[in-house]
Image (tube, rainbow, N blue to C red; front, side, top):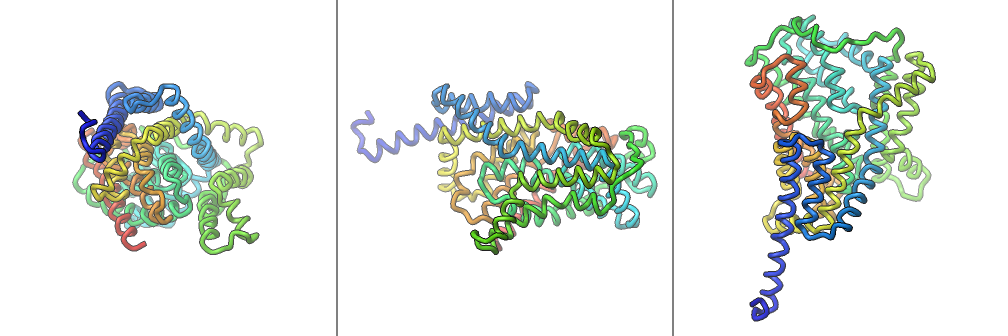
Length: 462
């Protein structure tokens, strides 16, 4: 029947059928991931692997090619992102175990008043959250929040919400956290520009969702006094010798400064100059993080008077906890590569272009949908980045970085009962499910919406 149609109509019909199959493959793959994570409670690594397999089979990829594609994407992503995640974990562990993190908290707290406490908590959480994963940051800061609230007789939420906002916004937007790193890798955008713009977006967002929202919601949700929670918080380890405040802050900011130096060199120095070569080398993310960890071993270790064996145990002890994160990020890379090789992302790009959807809006919407369905910000970021990657090709560096940030922004939307962070916050703060939805879930949604509005504003100007 098709043979009797004019050639252009025959091609259009064939293209439409192929396009429909690829879209069905994408929906099937994501649906499998969502069901396995949310309903079957299967580990996200296995869920992503099975989802990628489903996508490839429905799209018509030969099984041998599918296996090669998935393992290629996994290997490339672990090589690019996994090493940075591991180095970030080492730095975070060094800061925690040597007492450097405690020194930062205590120094800042001594210089604040009751009125400025919520703002100080945002600053502390943001500073400590740079090298640490969200869950580690929560465990580290909860004792501080509870002690501060108890001593000052402040409502728990007025102190706790700003701390959670500072941690969460960095987790979603700022490298070297796994989600932002994975987005940068999948979209092939500039890490330094993404880091700089991420900090610019994070500041007003954390203010709105932190001190402002915290003051508002603390008057509307009654929690038990902080003194009743003192027995539930993790025991705080005493450090007889600790690094200085300056040393701890310097180690926190060093990788950020080195990565930004690379971006400055790209914009201001000729590529054949010695200065460009030096800054380009030390600002490469892996080199910047590696240098920081090596310097931190000496600076923080000497400040805490740790022996070489103790430092070896600290650095080695940071790795088992992040093995699962690296596997999830790697499987996300395999899923992304399957999207690329099957042609799904090109189809989605074509449809989005026809519907006049910008990559900023599309990336945010896809990340929101997957985040709400799976509860995983990292899975949402990786999946959305793989789908909109073709739309970023050819964009100016700043616009490409903003797309990565929009995806990270969408990955924060509406944390609820399928998110491990939801239950972590609920238990530590002694809240009911309803109270956690009104506070933590509302804060996460506010972070997502406000950050996306800021990103759109920057996009209109840059």
